[in-house]
Length: 230
Image 1: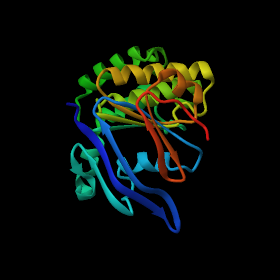
Image 2: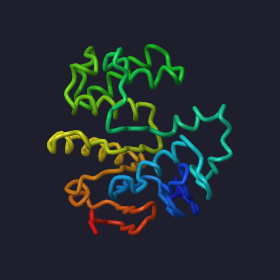
Image 3: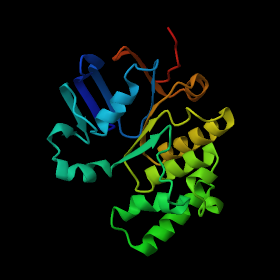
Image 4: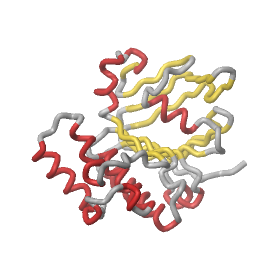
């Protein structure tokens, strides 16, 4: 029986008077690949940020790795987040660091030796086919190269969960498919992937679990779903 790795129990989140998500119940099993779909402002990003413990829910409980994350002390938050990988639409790469250095930082904060870092970074950059770009800075990369670098940084620490917020939002269709193939491969290693997206073609082609969100509520949850626009 698969382990439940993420569980939302009646979770709501308010920003001031605005209700971003309302009474969400959701269970994610280890190793799943889930698309979160819905219009802009539906609450997709909020769900991912709640898992990352960027802020607390207004009500309800969130369990990750079977633990109530509201009980994580701020001093232990960095250790919790090491089990998570994050990929964003705008990459969030450091402009003053090369591709190699951007990816290496994820291992530096974990205290790995220089030798270990050099070996692991080379391995993943070759796997992601960006090793020849290792000495370039983010502003010298194409959109696809930047996103591959961001994904490499997110997963080099071997996270249990990868949270991807519109990772193909600014990419052309061919580059988007390259990114999706990478996420698929990462998922095949056993990493749980949760991806917020507006990309109808990708969702409908992959036929993974689709959680549809509208006005902060889950309106549909299908195992081999489609991007259904109502």
